[in-house]
Image (cartoon, rainbow, N blue to C red; front, side, top):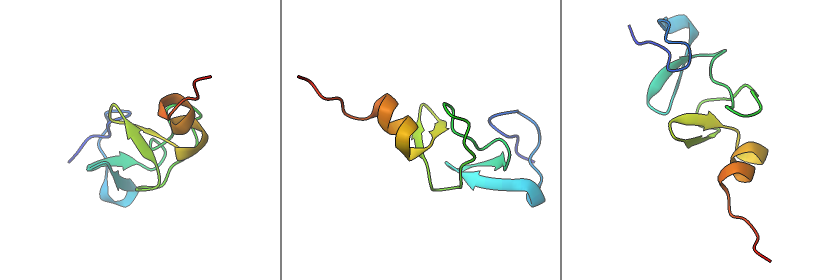
Length: 67
């Protein structure tokens, strides 16, 4: 049985969300910055950590304006 990458506890079939090729608990698949609950495939990844697309990923890792 796989372990959740966030809490390291076993992930049972009835409670799993598969994203980034691994199984997560539904309550553990959250944005690293704002803690918003994410849906599989509906988020961005940086250093194997999930982030919501906007505003967290865009603000932290997106392009910046140079003036």
